[in-house]
Length: 233
Image (cartoon, rainbow, N blue to C red; front, side, top):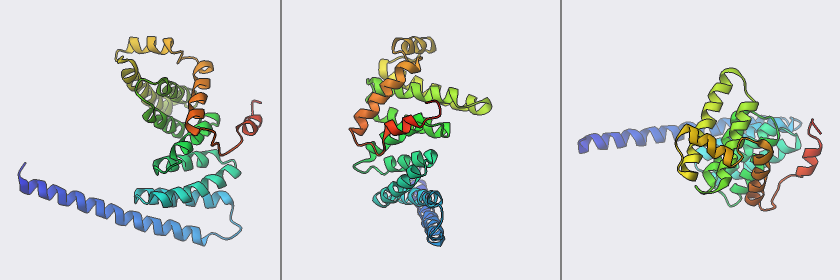
């Protein structure tokens, strides 16, 4: 490729990035106006959903501290409303802001994402973050990958099941490769058996321990109180 061609490609990339930023700024102003237009007596969850839109736009603009602040407020509103999907989405944004408590936000979000039947793709995405955060040889990534596959298998049907379990099988294969340098399908099955990754009664309590380490006592809600109100209790 000639130097002139490279220069043109760089110009195009810069223009595209600048254009995207302008679009995000416009989107941010729209969301902020929606929030300003909400009546004082609007449901807290309506406010939280717009705050999540604002936080996402701020994140795209790399205004991470501002994104953290508004996503944290949205989390508190969603938690109070027991709107678990929105609460987990807030934690996802908080994690991506890369602030001092972002890992704590991840741990809090994953606990909710596994405990409550929110959108399975959201739960899988949160557990993928755990995989990304754990060292290659750590069992933590393995139990997170197993939990993601379990959720995808149990909470989906039809084409959604086919698509999401295909993804979670890829996550498991990736973890097996980095964990024990395993890349053959038959060996992955043996690896899962050896680590008891086929038994939710084994890997879910181990995931809970991983989350305890990540959160380090900074839980943003009373887990015992939430467990006591679960439908199967």
